[in-house]
Length: 478
Image (cartoon, rainbow, N blue to C red; front, top):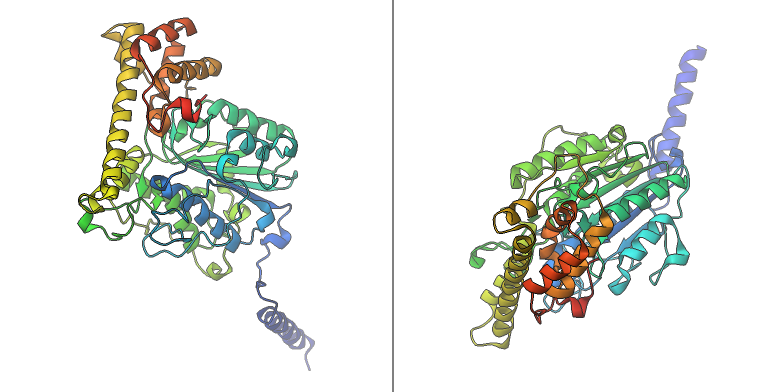
C-alpha cells in the first residue's frame, strides 16, 4: 500500500477522533479555533458600571446586565467581571416583571446571575477608580473585586448613564470628572498592568471625557455614544401617545441606542473575526441614522484593528457566522433626547394612573417637580451668566464651544469649585443640570474668581428649592 495515501487516511482518522472527542466533552467545552482563549496570552477582564438609579433610568442597569450576559457567553469568568449597579430596578415596585430586567421588547431576562459587586451607595467614584487601579485598600465597601490584571491582559470597560461636558454621572455624589478618570488611566498604564484596554461610554457629551485628554500612546482605545457637544439617545422607549405603546406595561426606556447596538451586533457575529473598527462603523451608522448623533473614537486608533474576541470573547454558537459589512440592525423606536427620558416616564405614569387615585396625584407631583427643577436650574445659570458678563455677553460666553480636539477647561480645580459654589446657593445640578457643565467651564476659562461666583450665585438664588434634587439632601456634584 502506498505510504502517502496511508498517511492521509491516518491524519483523517486522527482529525475525526479529535472532533468526536470535542463533541462529547464536558458541558461548556467546545471545539476552539487557534485564536481562542487557550492560546490568547493573559486574561480578559471587564468592568461594567451603571451610573444612575431610579426606575426612570431603568435602561442604564439593563445595558450593564445585558453586557454581563454577553461577556459570560463569550467565555469570561465571573471572577474577571466587576459589576457596578445600584440594583434598585429588578424588584422596584414599578417593574411589571419583578426580578426580571429586559433590554429590548421581547428580550430575555438579563438580570439573572449578575453579580452584586458594588451596589447602592458603594457605586461611587472612589470605588470605581480604586477598582481600575487594583487598589483594594482604597475601597469603601462592595465585594472587594478589583482589576488584578497583569501585563499580558486585555481589559474592557463599559459605562452607561447620564453625562455632561467633562463629567459622568454616578448614583451617588460626587460625579466622575474627565481629568480624574484620565489621570487614573495614565496611572494604570504606568503600572504595566494591562496589554491593551478598550473603553465604551454611553452618555451625553461623552466625547468630552477623552477629547484633548486621552493620550494616543498608552494602549487605550475608546468609543463614545456622542461627541463632545451632543446628547446621546435612549431607545426602546414608551410610545407617545401611550395607547400606541408596543409594551404598554413599561413606562420607561429599556435601553440606550449606542449600547444596544454594540451588544446586538456582538450577539449576531463571530467575534473571532469581527474587529473593533467594524463594530465602530456599525455603531456610527445606526446611531447617526436613528438619532443624528455622532459616535466617536479616541486614543490609540490602531487598536481598532483588534478582533472583538480579544476583549469580549465570543459565543460558540456564533462560530460559523460571517461578518456582514452592512447595518442590518434597526432601531424599533423613535429617538428621544437622553435628558427627556425621565419626563416620558413620569408622563406615562400620570397617564396610566386612575383618575382621582393616589398614584395619579403622586405622578402629577413628580412631573411638576421635574419641570420646576429644570426651569430653576436653567434660569439660575442664565442669570449668573448675565450677572458676571452682562446681559448681552452672558449667553454668548456661557455657550461658547472650543474647537474640536480641545480640552473643555484649563483648570479642572476651578470647574469643581464653580460647580460646588453654584450648588451651595442654588441646589444640585442633578442629571439634567449636567448639561450646564460647559457654562461653568467657560466661567473658569474667562478668568472669573471664586469670590465673584459666590456673589453672583447668592444674587441669583435667594434660597435652595426644597425638592428631591436638593444638594442639602444629596450632597455636591464636585
